[in-house]
Length: 627
Image (cartoon, rainbow, N blue to C red; front, side, top):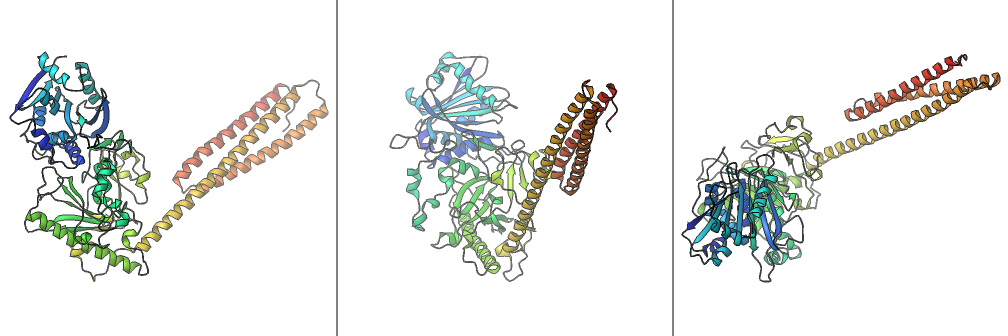
């Protein structure tokens, strides 16, 4: 195999690599930049793997996708500064704007990074390394890129092997082959390995890789120093959202409408449709003067933790600000506790690190409006609860809540499917496919994803439209108008009745199964007894020393026993038919009963065959039949 090495000489000081990375004050924002590159439509990866590894006793972080891969030109643009030629594909806009995500993100995590990529036409290896530039005394940033071409420069290839953890050409090929192993269909993708990871003042890495073997976490001493103790000193830990210190939790909400699966340290992240995983969902709209159309806002209650609340602000499907408290949530009271708002802020301009928005007049007006609408939602929910249950003393934020809807993503087609009410999504298998869907209309990967029809489904299955001006939200509704929603008590009673009915049906089914099993065992016992009696009778009939008295008495005993057995079999058959008739309305039970009925019929046929064999043996010894 031959390689060609090209150095891209960039007119920038090597120290700029570190300076450029300091825009990421939070390490997870640097990781998000690498995820965005795989999510963008030009790469279109289906899976993205994040893991830690050790190469030659060097601790490394690895990032890999199974997207389209990079050719030499694309690799050059990714490792270089000043390129941003991404365009929308099939209506999907790229997240990146400045072409700086990989450089700032990778250099924030560690001093050195090597990129392996395999496209349909070529395999490439590129390196962005501060250590390499320091060792060679470079005055400008030089990026070595190794392409699979027909020429080779051995001295240049030795440079990249000398300053990376991979010391031979074969070791580089092993990493490229690892891409194909995770891309069984296209055999394309990109693999990034970062080493010389950033460390704290104590000499440890800034990530805790030991506390949870399936997660990458920020050490507790880092995020504990950022706790807000000003509001509730007795429960300060909850004021740091889990997504701040857990990469798994952060990736689960990273995209408003997630498609690509993220696997962290070998375990898939359970992505959320955040706007559809809330309770008591209501939709409102924001109509600023600087836009021609309304911006939808979704309000609801966090069903996992009441202490993690605020506005989830997305831009081009990507999370920019999480749990941003507004309006009444900023005051020293319980107003707005547990309430989450979700909005797509495509009209605002995010900062370079994609962790906030530029403080413009548009941004300030938006935040003020969000605070007003959130308080209106809070007041409406409190009013409804007080009207439905005037005697309740439990605050609405402390009541146990379930999401209004349950959605799950198919591991094959990556489409999201809505589950029927009553299914606990937390008990679903780790790998879920469309063929497991209880809804036959969406039981195939060929079926399109369910469109968002602007309807809201309550826990009892009742839907109401959200698109009309009257139902747009608290600010658009009349406070004195009659409320069309069923009360929480009625919904709960209906749900309890359905659960009781399901449990009673299950108990009845189990009872029938036990009865059928008992009857089957009795049939088998009778069959064995008949076989034993048949053998005894044949032995007596074939014996020359048997007396006429013995034959007569034996015949009478056998006949009596056979008549009793036959009568018992008839009774069992009647019981079987009665059980089948009783369980006919249940499809699931009917399948079990049909199988058992076939077994019973088979036993009866075998019994008839035994009787025929006995008759033949009796006729062969010329002894008059007993019957």
